[in-house]
Length: 303
Image 1 (cartoon, rainbow, N blue to C red):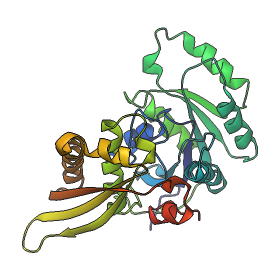
Image 2 (image 1 turned 180 degrees about the vertical axis):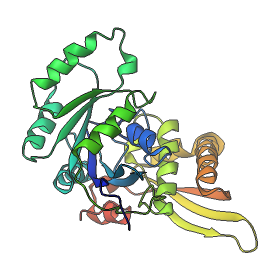
Image 3 (image 1 turned 60 degrees about the horizontal axis):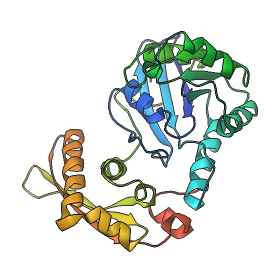
């Protein structure tokens, strides 16, 4: 592909503890929804590759990662390994944190991990829209400066879009000159089936009680256009770990499953720009998060 001489390109990882707004930031930059968002932590389980292209400046390939946290099971270990391994494959790291003057063990672990990488690190202090007083920000910047020598520090609000343009401009500052990796209209390398599964999982996360969500996976059993109609038939299965969870997911007279399906269908239709006939089943696979074959089966591959 032809590029102008000043065209920059490279890979950027967005890291941080669970629930600091990584997926929200990436969705804001890309301008459409790719990664699922939820108030519940650890919602991103796989490395999601998205592409931001500015034909004048260059192309940024984002690797959104699961939050770095203390793993409690094989799925947790997989998620942490994905996050830490991503650091070896990128040109720039974007570390997202919340505005605070308390540095916990999780942040210290991320700082130690970054010290081994020798890549530019941009700190983004997210959620500044939640600050009662803006002058508190200087205190938080100072707190983080003490644990790592950042190349840049940017206060931002991914939710409101505040200073997100500064984040993009700063990334370009540190990227090498190079070619376009993807066509300019590419926004993700995720297959549609995977995005559909993630949308269903997000709607379940939003609707369900605290104890259920991390014990669910979603598989797409069938996804194909119906002959002679502008309609896509999708069959999906929500997999959970306990019989009691299955009851909660289905709900009284199927009300909860209906709600999850209806919310998911609305968003899937928006994404595919077609009518969708969505059918969802619920199955129990006990302790699937500690089973290597099942993790692989649900798309969490170690490689």
